[in-house]
Amino acid sequence: MAYHNNPSFSLLLLVTLSLTSSYAIQAETRHLLEVTMPELPKPELPHLPEIPTLPKPELPHLPEIPTLPKPELPKIPKLEFPTLPKPEFPTMPKLEVPAIPKPELPTLSKPEIPQVPQKP
Image 1 (cartoon, helix red, strand yellow):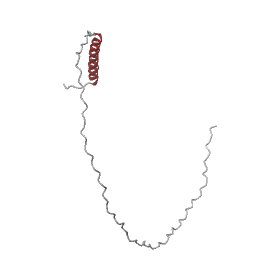
Image 2 (tube, one colour; image 1 turned 30 degrees about the horizontal axis):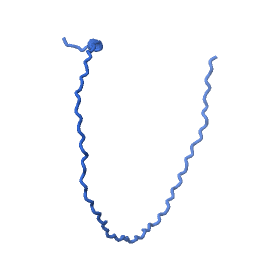
Image 3 (spheres, helix red, strand yellow; image 1 turned 135 degrees about the horizontal axis):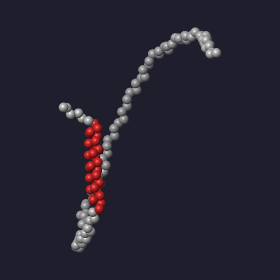
Image 4 (cartoon, helix red, strand yellow; image 1 turned 120 degrees about the horizontal axis):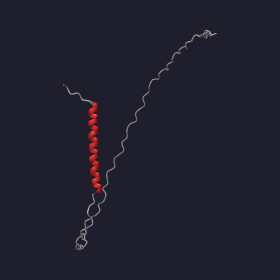
């Protein structure tokens, strides 16, 4: 006989397992809350000797660096470019767009709606 997975059985198994695991967690937390730890005395630290202060080191005197004169750069001559004549373009004739005549819509008369007979 083949085994068929029953969704209601799976749901029941899931709910059962979740309930049992949450009960165990609640019991453990309750146990942790009720336990009291004994107070331990604080240990006393031994007195450390004072560290002697060291003298501040003196830096040796550096000789002064002589200042050098700024070098003079040669001047670059300004370049002159020849002027170019502006090109002359031929004039284009203005194009005329032909006018499109508007179409005339025929006038329609109002349709007559027959009257609905009334019930006596």
